[in-house]
Amino acid sequence: MALSPQFGSITPSQRQEILADNFLTFDASTGGGTFAAQYLPEIYEQEVERYGNRTLSGFLRMVGAEMPMTSDQVIWSEQNRLHIAYNSVTINDASANTININPGGSGDTFKENVISVNDTIVILDANGNEAKCLVTASNNSSGAITAEPFTAAGLDDLGFTDSQTGAKVFVYGSSYQKGSSLPNATGTPGAQTGYISVQPSFTQFSNTPVIIRSKYVVSGSDTAQVGWVEVATEDGTSGYLWYLKAESETRLRFEDYLEMSVVEGEKKATASVISENFPGTEGLFAAIESRGNVNTGFTAAAGLDAFDEILKNLDTQGAIEENMLFLQRQTSLDFDDMLAAISGGAQGGTAYGLFENSEEMALNLGFSGFRRGSYDFYKTDWKYLNDASTRGAISGVNSIEGVLIPAGTSTVYDQILGTNIRRPFLHVRYRASQTDDRRMKQWLTGSVGGAFTSDLDAMEVNFLSERCLCVQGANNFVLFKGV
Image (cartoon, rainbow, N blue to C red):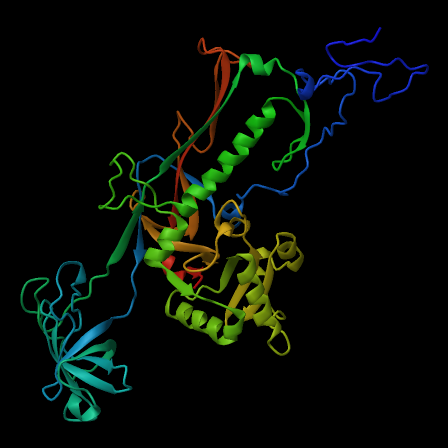
């Protein structure tokens, strides 16, 4: 009699061998599940690291430091230029030798005139005209100056015209008669004529910390479901992990956020509809866009001339000797191509002072160095700009392709200490006090995994930090952007 079992026909075999019709199967076609108990799959215990090292942090550890603070805001002051110079000056009457430092300016656009009578000045314009003059009259508040040229009767004889705008003026000294005294300043401070005493000023900047939080949750039932995975994580952890595998990755992701939040951070603008309870924080990119230098479209095809333009701009700023370049892949290759095109090679002769003059140390950290003019540059790829899950996903118009960061420290005035202090140009401030250190907090809550804080049948791993980035001397930084 023919068998008609529920799971299909079975034909016995004379030997213990696997045939198409002598074993039971449970699959979708027969209405059952997978009969895994018969033939277990070959399972690899070790994870495949198909994306390599996935962490992005480490950039700030190379260029900055971390310091505690106790307030909701960090304020610092930066020195202004030492010498007296003005751009966007108007030639009022070229034949009468009258100019105006502050033509119609008010509020934030007002430029106080601190040029005194008997100062000697240079007047320049974009047409190549130049006049060296003696100041015979100067008004502190209106910005009006009478400047008599040394080599001509009037500024019009030297190529300047009435109502001409965009001229530049700077003071190079003074000239007095024998036996003379300084002219007396008349009027009240801020509205003086004659001799004007120059009071040093500074520019004040501030930033606010942002609170960064994350949490990993695993239920009590899942902690009892053992499933081991062999891992080798980016933080150096290796071996077998259970449910804490996910906790480990949550922590690694959070550590990346600590850096990414102060690199990408933005302050809340007045036009934003975000609540005032979320003031934001000024990140690295925003600070350079606002107060630094932006170079657009650097390519190897532009050659050394394009890079020399960057150096010329650095000369007008702090002229910091040692600088670090953190670049995305294409920009890094453009630099390599530019250097390779230079006869004799630009790589030789550099000093690795930033790395204790050890080229081996620099190379171990992934930096290659070259020298141009009076500047040393140390170049490395920045993974954050290459990773497909962050800035590496898109390149082109306005894409960020690298940053130039000065090495060393800057001198700033600390409002709390009341003295000048030296700080790295780029450093992180985090909230901390004697009772609570918020640099990187981690704690357990719930009723699983050793935590007994609530009746929640789960373990919650909490992460928190409160920090901000101080970008001091941003005028020495360069942001490379695509076109």
